[in-house]
Length: 124
Image (cartoon, rainbow, N blue to C red; front, side, top):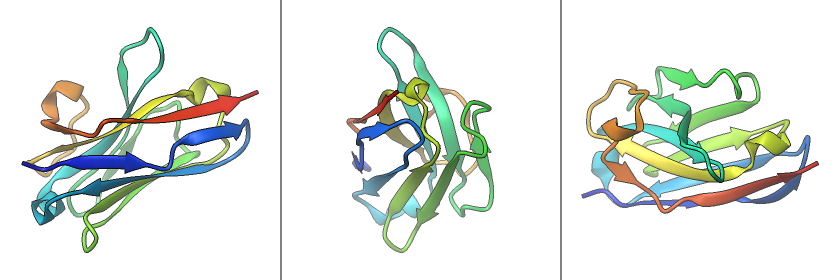
């Protein structure tokens, strides 16, 4: 059972940057695909970015392409989301997720492991 803990959220002005981190409790995480989802008030959970176990392939939602970067450090059991040029519409709770097979999956129900979420608020 892998536990995930997110950190790095906060309040930032539009145009600013934040770096989210996700720490996994177990080294088996190194063989897992990982992703960042977000959920705004009254909205469903949206896939933001995903990465394969090796980091060799990534996926980004169109809304964050060229602004966000997902990466991982398997030696530290960590996944990161660098968020630049933030917009008010990026305001949401951001969740780290993982699944035990390597390929990227786009559907939240395909991810078995979830963190508790971290709030990101972007002011205009």
